[in-house]
Image (tube, rainbow, N blue to C red; front, top):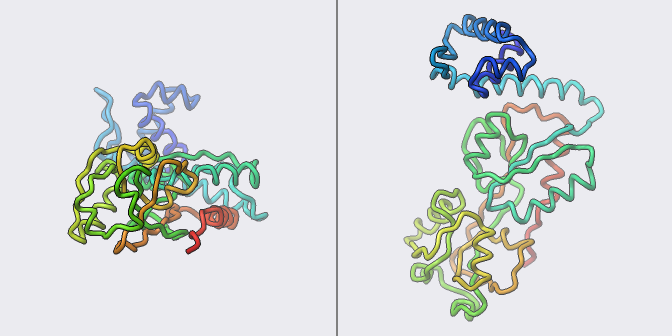
Length: 296
């Protein structure tokens, strides 16, 4: 097995066509077919069904491993060239939606000012998509809520966040300095979609305390919730970090008595990645630009 076979396999799998893959790779179609045939013979499995063309179950299962092998090879090259502690030339950073707003501008400013030579791509993803991107080599580093429990991911806690209740300034709740936790059971809230990891964390946290607030409106992002609260549509329970860097006019923050649980905000990288000294510097720098703990 050689690396060109893996590159060709992934291109054919992506294009779903031998000829189109050959055109993209600047190879002849017989050369592509020969590489795939040789790979199948070495593995002892059929990767593609020819007529009609389709990935076999074995081919689908092999894709992430082929990507990992190529990623490790690239990491090996980078590590070998890292004698001067240089930063990587390209970095893809993915941020889960709940922490995107306060960190995005900081990341962009950091790369533009400190490392303009690094080509950086920043993506906002759902948590499960972000973790899959790390495993498959599409993402170099991610920032998420919680500590992923998977052997494919290396985690580093960089911040602890808390939940806070926000309400329009003219809402009755905004008139009180604090709210007992049990009162949330009677307050219709703006909430994230139940499909989001952040809302699932909130639901588990409140459910463990026997609290199930009614949901007035479901939205897809924290940014949408902040906007709706500002426009007077009702209160919401959000990560406190989401308020940093957001426009807070028209919003009142209300302390919840009995809800002092902290959530870890975590920097995550693929376990298989070779952490060169340059990449470790990058990780440390990202941790350093994260919003500090608010003063009491």
